[in-house]
Image (cartoon, rainbow, N blue to C red; front, side, top):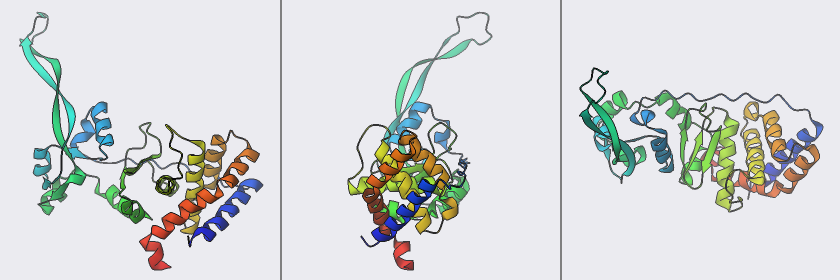
Amino acid sequence: MKYYGKSEEVCKKIINTFKNGNLPKEISPIFINRNDNIPSISWSFSNQLIKIINNTNDARTFKQWNSVGRKVIGKSFHILGPVFKTIPNSNKKEEEEYIKVLIGFKTIPVFRFEDTEIYDQELWEKKSGIDVEEIKRLENLPLREVAEKWGLSVTSYNGKNGSGLGFYQHGKRIAIGVKNLSVWCHELTHAADDKLGTINNVTGQDVENEIVAEMGSAILTEILGFEHEQDLGGAWKYIKTYAGNDKKKTIKKITELINRICACVSLILNESDEIIKNK
């Protein structure tokens, strides 16, 4: 793995920085505030969850896609819609003669953005409702092409909703809720760890997985020349928390995982067309 040596060199340098304790202040998270105006913004929490499970950030009905210049080319999935019945109002104190009551739910077929294509570019640009600036930012993320090679979609979400700074969904997507480059590289390292088959497949967050991802992020940002976004202060705090807030145990655990960390970083860099082109 041709980038392994460089990765190991940077990793040891970071470990030494952790040892001497001369760390910069952690970077404050810059939360993403998407300015989308799409139908699914108003969906219920349950339907929002169904959308996420189906690996998309934007899903609409057949007619809704047609009305904004896109045609459906893939299969639907279903969300739930309320079913109301109009009945006479038995409450004489209220003015309404009839009222609507919820009697159940029906399934509504919707289609992912990824399963549509443009048929009217001008209409799409005017009516999409999508935060175009955020889409452009995502498209220009360093190493974005690596995620695409691995069949992962890259999306963002409004970070201040209790969903965490970012997450990696096994074999499907990376979602980020902040603009900090270190978070993006953290989630991409999770994906590399998964790709290599070295990730610990457990429910919830795992100590070793998180240390690998956070160290991988710190190494990647330095190698790519984004040291101002490296966030070593935040990385140390994050990793130490997972290692029980014990400095010696934290350094020991990172050292034990150094081969796995460097293998993840090397895989990402070896897969990057941009890195190879500029080498």
